[in-house]
Every structure is written in structure tokens, then in C-alpha cells.
Length: 477
Picture 1 (cartoon, rainbow, N blue to C red):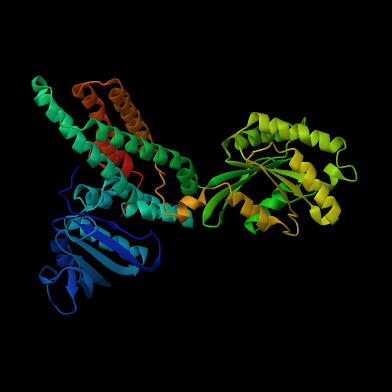
Picture 2: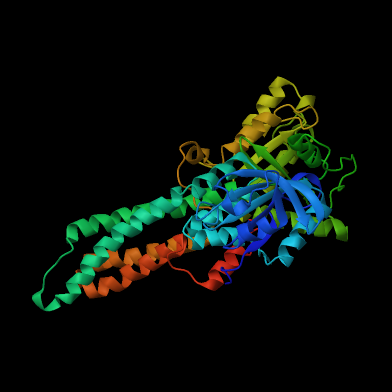
């Protein structure tokens, strides 16, 4: 990795805008920018104090390219931990490219994806999990994902892992010391205290591993499939949830032949709604492919909304033929996807009396097993009645309490994998304590656990791992 080079890149989004920021970082950053920038005061940038702003002109020899504002960050007091200059210029794409090309001719190298943050990690400005949280923060598109990324970037997760690692390392040092005095048969590590520590680490690791289920869906959005027979109002419901005409609505059954997806934030949590093709027996090849894809989308969803046309399903006989067929369809989905929360949504209730609505609610409740995560919801997708209540029901499927309490949530699959491996080694250590194994045997598993802890924070790493992580960053960050 050429970390001695001085690098540059556009730090703001590409395209035209009011302003653009071009970042330059490296040992020659001030020298290079000083060679193309003339301050209004006539003073050299190199002689100015760190963390100061300077107005002047960017020039290529005698040609002025733009009037710009330059920010100085000297020494290690910068995002990257090395001398950095940020040029705030006008947001014309032509001006941006002219300045970037000028900087490259003067000795800069074009920064690779995530290279500024990589340098921040290498220079000790942040650990690896914090660096990864930077990318998550940039990608966050709802309050929940933003909150998790901010907590991790500020070191909440890192601090918890570092504390566990240090405590384990202290005991590991004592056990390693015992190996030097094996002939004397002495114990420097108190086995009772060691037992308590291993139990504590095991509890924390299990909590963090369990949090991945919540953290991952909050970060990536919770997929919700809208399913049901044709023409029950699935597309109308999608439009009502999104409050826009996203899907085509028609009285013709089978209008939706492929899935339509869109996202919505409810209570700060991202939900990804999938309007699927209607489920029914059909001889239409294209519609049949759509129905097949519907079941694929159900398997990928975290929550399933099963939409029912209330008047046709119940009518004057709540337990008639249509209801019996509905029971079979619901049981089919529950048997095929037993762990998925299912919301039975009775649509078109605007055509029913209060008595009929009450009856429908009771009958649908009978289809839900006891202690099930499933729910019943009565709505009119056309008028919007009950749609807000349905959104609140969806929110109940997410552990928002963990967010409110600012608990550490794992969202990164790399961290999740390292935690699983660390827990496996800790359980081996626990087994060794229970069996009264000697310190030299337990030391092997302790070292492995420490290794996996180090993988998370970056105390153990390699160029290939860093390349994979930072390749997913945007250029300029």
C-alpha cells in the first residue's frame, strides 16, 4: 500500500452543485496546494496555523481557475492523521476536474476507494470497526441505521470488545507465565476469577451475536411481502403505505405479474415493501412465473402481509366456503414458513358494518396460533382507514427498545462471524476449566479467542482484508 503518496479526490458528490470539496492528504499536501493557490493576503499556506481557513485563487501558472476557500489541517490533527488540505471550490464539474487534474500534475495521486479512511485507521485515528461504521453512516437512509452507525463510529462497539480482550489478555499473560514455571507447579491465574471472567465474556458474546438479527434488519431495511389472491388490493395497499402511486391499480385480476419493491421509514426504521403477483391457480405461463416468484419473495421476507378481500371472503356467512379456502391458504403459508410473522390484513372494510368488522376480526384471530408473532389488521387501502395502525403493528416486530436504550447492536457480517468464532474458542476454554486442563492446553484456545477479538478492531489484519473492506467505500472518503 502506497501510504507515503499524497492523494487527492473529490470529497463531495459528483455533478454540478453550489460548492464542491476536493481533499488532499499526505506529507506533501500543503506544499502541493500552496503551489497552485494564492491567498488574498499574499501569505504562503505553509506558514499558516493549522485549522485555519484562507480565501484565494486556484491558478494554473497565470490562468485563474476559481476563487476558493482552503482549509488547513497540519501534522496529525486531521481526519487521516496526516497533513490534509480541503479545497472548497464552486461546484461546476469543469472546475472540479480542472483542479483535480492540476493537483495530479503537481504530484498527487488519485485516491482509491476508502483510502482516506484507510489512512485514518493505519494512523490510529480509529479502529477497523469504527472505520467500517463510516461507510455505514454514509449509506444510512433512516434514523435507526443512522443511530447504529453513529454509535459504532464513536467507538461503543469497539470499547466493549477492547475491554473484553484486555481482561482476557491479562489472564492469558498470567497463564503463559505459569508455563515458564511448570516444574514448580504454581498458579498465577486465580481459577475462580478466571471462571467468572470466561462466563462474563460468554454472556456478552452471546448477547452481541443475538443482536445481529435486529441490527442487520435495521441497517438493511426489513423486507415485507404483500401477498394474497389477485384483485384483493395488494397494489392499492402498497400505494397507501408509500402515499404515492407506485404500483398499477386495476380491476383486472392478475395485473401485477412481477414483484414491485419500494422503501418506507416507519418510526425511524426502514421497511422494504414487496408487492407480489396474486396467488391463484392459473394456466397463464407468465402469471404462473410471477406466482412462483411470489413464494421466493415470501422466503426472503422478514414479515408477510396476507391480504384478504373482506366482503368476498366472508359476506353474510363468516364461516362459509370462501373462509374455509382462506384457512387452507393461511395454513399452507404457515406450514411452509413457520417462523415468519404473518399479518392477516382484511381489506375493503369500508364496505362493511361495524358488526361485520367485529365478526371478521374474531374469525381471523382463530387462524392465528397461540403465542404466535402473527397479527390481524382491518384496513381500507382505498380510503387509508387502518393503514397507520398497520404500520404500528409492523414496528412491533422490530426490537426498537435496543435502539432506545442505546444498546450495542451488531450489523456487520464480518463482525458477526468473528464473534461466533471467538465464542467457540471461549466455550473450549470453559470446557478446559471444567475438566481441570493444564494452562498450556487452555492457552491455545485463549490465543485463538484473542485473535478473533483482534480481527474485529483491526489489531489483527492483513492487506487482503483491508482491501476487501475499503473497496466498498466511496472515493473521497
